[in-house]
Length: 440
Image 1 (tube, rainbow, N blue to C red):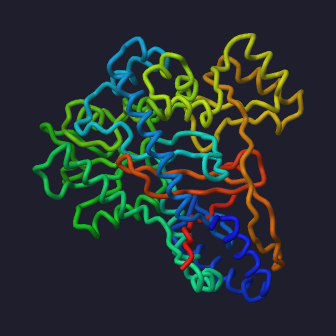
Image 2: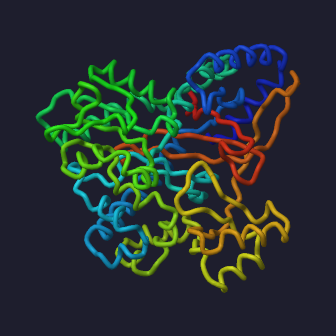
Image 3: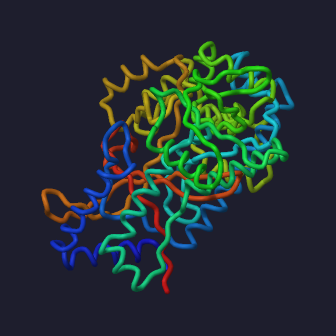
C-alpha cells in the first residue's frame, strides 16, 4: 500500500459526488474560521484534502530523523570541543559565548522541524532546518481534527484506520522529561512560553499553555522583557519560572539582548531551564548546509552519515567572491539564494523564477550580504482536490513537509502546498494536515 493509491481513492470519492462534498467543505471553512488555526490574524488557508501517508512513510521519517539527529549531535560536539571548528560558522563573540553555556540537560536539539522535499523512501532533499523557534504544530493538529470529522474522511475510515500526529500534549510530555535532567527535584515546574509579543504566534502559544495547565503545570505566555531576575530566581510577575519553552529565535535573542538582560543573566547563571538552548543555532543557521559537506565534517561521521549528506543535503556555498557570482549568474536555474539566518522564506530567491536581468539585480544586491547560494531542488508534486467558486478542481501542487523531532524522536509532520517555486507563508500556499492511513 502506498500513499498514491490512497490519494487517488480519495480524489475518486470526491469526484463521484462533488456537490455533497462541497457542502461539507463549506462547513469545514466555517470550522477553521472559528478555530485557533490562525496565522497573522487570518484563518490558515487549507484544502479539503489531507496529506496521506502510510506506516511505511512513517518509518522513513523516523529513519531520516534518527540520522539527522546523530549528525547534529556530532557537529555540536565538534563545535563545543574545537575552537577552530567554530570559525566555520562565523558567529559573533556574543553568540558564540551564549552557545557555549552549559544548558544543564545536554540535548543539542530538543525540538526541531526539518523541512524536506519528500518523494517517498530514499527520494528526498532537505530544504532547511528549523531548530530554533520551531512552529506550526497547532496548525497541523487543528486542521487534522477538523478534517477527521468530514464526510470524506469518515467514508475513507470504512476501509482505513486513520490517525494524525498529536503535537501539543506530546511536547508538554517531552519538554518536562527534559526538565527532569535539569532538575529532578522539582516535580511540577512552572512554565513560561516566551517570545516577543510582536513576533510570536499567540494562538499556538495559548494551545501549549492550556496543555501544560491541563497536565497540572502552572503555565504562562510571557514577553521576555517582562521577566525579572531577582536573588538568583527568574520571575514573571509573582510566579517563579522554572522552565522556559523558548520561542524567541536566536537572531532576535542576540540582536535584542539589551532588552532581555534578566532572562539572559538567569540563563547564563543556570538559574532557569531554557528549552531549547542557544546551541540550537549550530544546526539552524543555513551555513550548516555548507559545513556539512566540508571534509573536516565528513571525516568524523560514519559512512552512512556521509552518504546521507551527499545524497540529501543540497550543495551549498557562501555567496561571496567573483567565481561563485559568475557561476550563479551563468546557471541561474540551478541555484537558489537564501539569507543565512532569516525564517519564513524571507529574502529567498530561486533563479528559475526570474528573468536574467532581474536575477542579476538580485545577485548584485545579495553578494557579500550574509547570503548562501544553494543547489535548487524541485519540490515533488501531488494531486489535490479544491473547490473554486463551488466547482471541483483537481490540481497538481508542490509540497514541502516538515519533520518534527521532540527530544530526538520523530513525533509528527507539517505540510505546505503551493504552485510557486517557493512554498511558504509569504507566497500563495495551503497548509494541509498530515494523516496516516492503514488498510484494515
